[in-house]
Image (cartoon, rainbow over all chains, first blue to last red; front, side, top):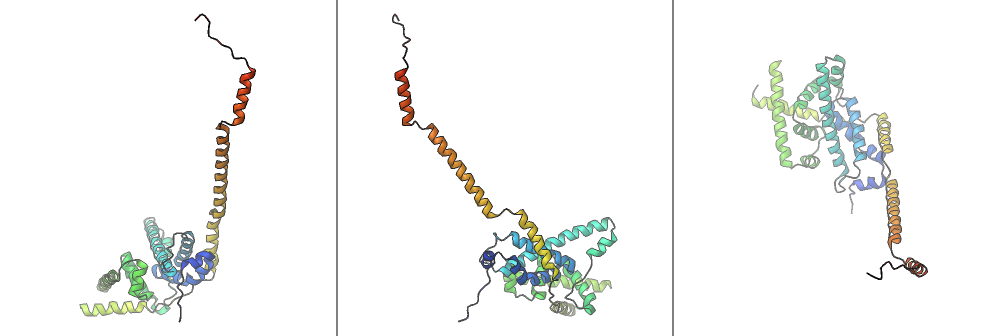
Length: 185
Length: 99
């Protein structure tokens, strides 16, 4: 009989090995952060913040939950908070007409995207970034991270039905945005 | 553009998202993250020290209580000393005979 061991946090908690956690999940965190920011510098900053949060929240972790799900949640929240702060920073830079800061903050440097597709992806991510937070997260998890609806529901702590309806709304909004930009061309 | 073709465009765009490759984080990021965590670790007081301080506090309070309880309790020794004093010292009767 094959026993599948679920990697619960208690194992890590006993060992107190944050380095183990980093080795196992840093790629996941980095890539998810990249899907939100499309920028390597920002993604690196998010990775650091996520593992600092993991270290701080050792005690509040629900031991029944899966470590990966927990880390997904932290990464999503950290990325969204980071983007809010960046948006405020960008607004201030526009107000103060600081071209260098504006350019740095709008830089698209997603290493997972091939060079020849960079422009089309930049345009696509511009639309995705305009979506409401929840719709954007669901789209990223379903389509880029290739997670199932059940897994996404578990990560976001909402029902699979709610995931489906939010995804349909995201698709509808995306369609509207693409049509609008085509009309403007 | 009709509804059907725009739906196809969106579906194609979404399928394209699946082609984004997963990349490994830069190696230097590990050291940066660990140094950030180490800086926080320094700010944290170890649980062992908190426990030791709590035990020391409880011991001091207990010792104080024991001392206070012993000081206020009427011990046999104190009573015997009082009796001895009363026997040595003459008790003066202040009442007047003609009252």
